[in-house]
Amino acid sequence: MDESKTHLSGTIPHSRPLIGRTEASAVANILQSGQIAQGSEVHRFEDDFVRYLGGGYAAAVSSGTAALHLVLAAMGIGEGDEVVMPSFVCTALLNAVNYVGGVPVLADIDPASYNLSPSDVEKRLSPRTKAIIAPHMFGGAVDMKSLSKFGIPMIEDCAQSVGGDYRGRPLGTIGAASIFSFYATKVITSGEGGMVYSSDKGLIDRVRDLRDYDGRQDYKVRFNYKMTDVQAAIARVQLSKLEAFIERRRNIALQYFDELTAFKLKLPEQKKGHIYYRFLIQPEANIEMVLRAMTAEGVGIARPVNKPLHRYLGTEGFPETEMAWERTLSVPIYPSLTDNQVQTILKILTKSL
Ligand SMILES: *Cc1c(COP(=O)(O)O)cnc(C)c1O
Image 1 (cartoon, rainbow, N blue to C red):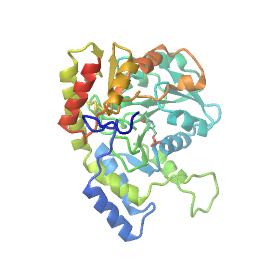
Image 2: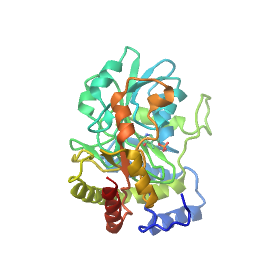
Image 3: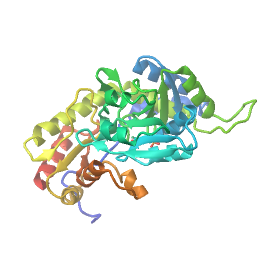
Image 4: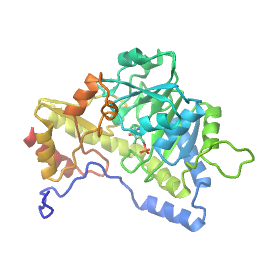
């Protein structure tokens, strides 16, 4: 792209964290204290998080991937155990199952929600299935009720959906355990960071044991997956802003729905409890054209999933995932977008349709 080109709109990135002075002063306090690795601020963040979800137990870790790895290990999933996950997701899930020597089993999605299709999951179950990783993708809940009928432990992946709910229950509190990510592009951030949550104290105790190798009497394979107090200080402030962040996301989504329903375009499901981490559209026209038009005007638009897992693995049999990957785009939606920017995005987008 021509670097000298000035965009009418200025550049609008696909995602951008909203970090303010409160986060900066919280970090300054931690730095001055001299306790900058995992310490009391991490414990305070865990307490805040548990309070936010209305009870239970939580262990903060260094990333969402680390959270997935440790929850699988703490559940005793290992060599040869099958773990079901959707294909329309990032490779973090695949990595985590491979870290413990498990066998990833991919399933297709429900095209309406872009989440795991329970009827497809059912076809992929076997006597060796030990867990289902059920992500609530793009801020909307997966059909937990249908998935729970299989009687297989479920790990809710809430990396994209902290603060959302399913039939009035906070996401993350429904399955056997859940994981969260605080990576820079997520709903709330600490740069990098993650959380394992469960109502099972024993499980969280095992995660705590595994995340830190130092100062033990016994030896077993443990990890260094600790969150730092610096990260926790940022994350605590972000968590206090979560409700406001979600309100702003829903407000932007409404502006998109208002304008775009007049066009021939598949839009996200409008469901209570959705937090619109991403706003997915399926234009009738070739998405490459929409991608190029938006990019040329400086609007960060992207495929919502880089590449489906079955494509990395060279396998077939995921028609809905294929279709979603080929046709779906994600338009910018985050709390720091101004209404002017939202209107600019809409103007450029509708012109390109
Ligand atoms: C981002 C993400 C992860 C991994 O989190 P990291 O903090 O980047 O390791 C896992 N699952 C989903 C659905 C994600 O979006």
